[in-house]
Image (tube, rainbow, N blue to C red; front, side, top):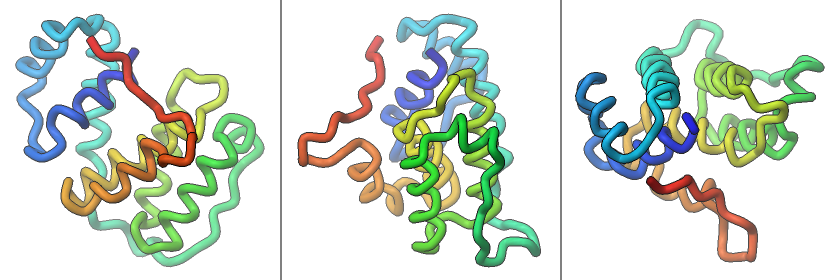
Length: 156
């Protein structure tokens, strides 16, 4: 599954903040047991992540995001709330929020879970702020010690 590959890459390359070239990365993922179609989708996703830049636009001013009916029906309420939390905390700029929403809506899931939205946001913040600034957020994304189920990628 493409999302498992992204989480595998996050865990593998968290501190280096540098991925190998796509061909080498594809070989490494294949050797780790991932399927070629999923690898291609993950590499496309990473290419989209490269398009996310720290600089926003003139429209990157505090705002309230009104979700469309289609977005509300597909994006879990808790995930939308998490994005609002990140933005109101000054961690996620409006242009990055829109990037996260676009990536979540592009998933094939009928309903995109809060966990997936959180992981997409974490990957975006990792890209924008670096590994050191998102480590504390990883605990929040992975779940707490309060008995809440944690998202665990499929290990290959």
